[in-house]
Image 1 (cartoon, rainbow, N blue to C red):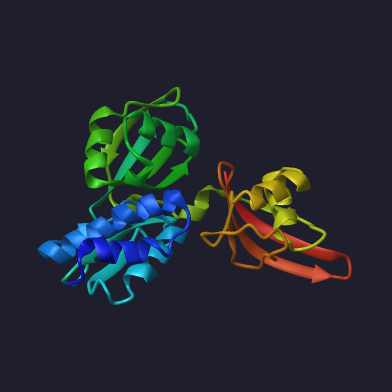
Image 2: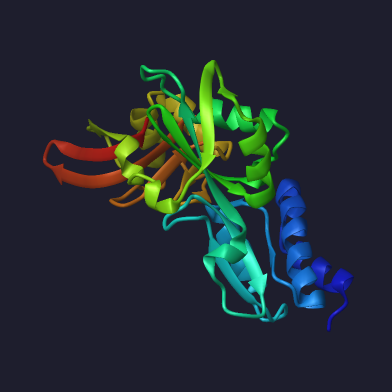
Length: 264
């Protein structure tokens, strides 16, 4: 077996960003723990880009473990890596689904940012939290098992909204697209900066700055190329502002016509 220090260093040399090095270090430690003890271990929650990157790095053969990725449901934006020496089943990922719902008799809409802020306010780390799926007055939250225990015992309010919190099953999760609204626009081109400007309601200059500063993700991968073209099926996320899915792109002599679903 290659010494842990040497193996870890060989992987870390492939990563340039300091925050990504720190996160990968935690993932690697879980992988090596399984390698040393034979016990199943799981990584923190990772965004799609890092989950795919770390999965590919650790699947190179040097680790020699069974590695799987799962976020609690198909299509999750955030997922965990599971390291084990046996067949992987969903329960091994130690993911719990918690439902937080307004207690008011009338609808009090919850917002993704407020849900996340309330969870962080309980002392949870972002890496303890998977996808947060908000549907009007209720929010389905995918959590690390230990974090779920904290939420179930301590979360009483999300922003100004008093909530009831309980464990629930994946069969209770509505279709994720149900909280998206359709948006149509006619951009001058399919360039990423122009798309971001139309889809998120900002100026072309602000959109370009967002892309160049690494705040825009295409299909889970961060891109800083403003001239990249978008196409049907692409998932575009602007950090701090939401997510869109490109439903269709049509063109004629008058230009382009784009239809997207935007998370609201």
